[in-house]
Length: 61
Length: 283
Image (cartoon, rainbow over the protein chains, first blue to last red):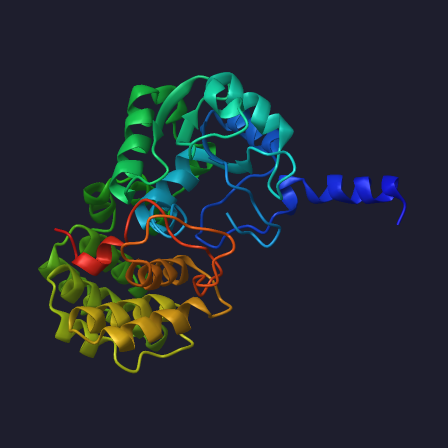
């Protein structure tokens, strides 16, 4: 695979919206731009969980 | 731990979905949940999260303009997370207004659901003062269970006869046994619970919990392990994984991704807090 193609694939995988959602019933809004827009429109606070130890595409966090 | 604990708590979930816009992200842009826009927004508020090695970040409650309205530690209890959410809304009532959809809602059961999600359980019960069908009776019983008004719960459940609601009624009654720490009653109440029920994972979790408290730890751990391996993940599956690992990792203080003793869900462990159910109902 050419390096450029590999880089583009990685960039795609890094979008939060691609990460498997959890199944707690919390209605997550991803990515952040969509969450911020929704909070402004609906006049709501954001509940944000930053994660520091790495996330996996299968939803691990 | 947040996912198995506070985020699976019905009170936290209800209030979060009614009054907050919920979002998670990886502080590293390279992580699967990386989001550079979120990182820039959050590190303006919490500059200490911009470094290379940071402590486990708090849960943040933030206005869209970037004003911090509240926060709790990553390992906070469900009660603490719920309290922080309520306080943030009390301190910032401009973010706590009824939505247009809520204002337009006319059905008593839906109005009761809104009140219940907002933590107004007495109001929710009053909105269902005259239930007109079995779904309303069941939800009234659910509200009274949370209020621990056991006589009122049983009175409401006495009206629930429909076949498709019997598992729900059974599970609500089992909660009384749990809250009163009557473990034999809890175990027996959930014996042979239908596996295709919408309350199946909850029932399996509590039946294992009853066995744990009755001294049948080996059987309880097997039941939690089996439950955590079910393909139908939900909050009870996460809580079962947490219960299993609380027992298995007892006394362990460090975790490694190279650790072969992962949880049934593949986690390397649960830092911070043990699953409180292993100590009892915690009145």
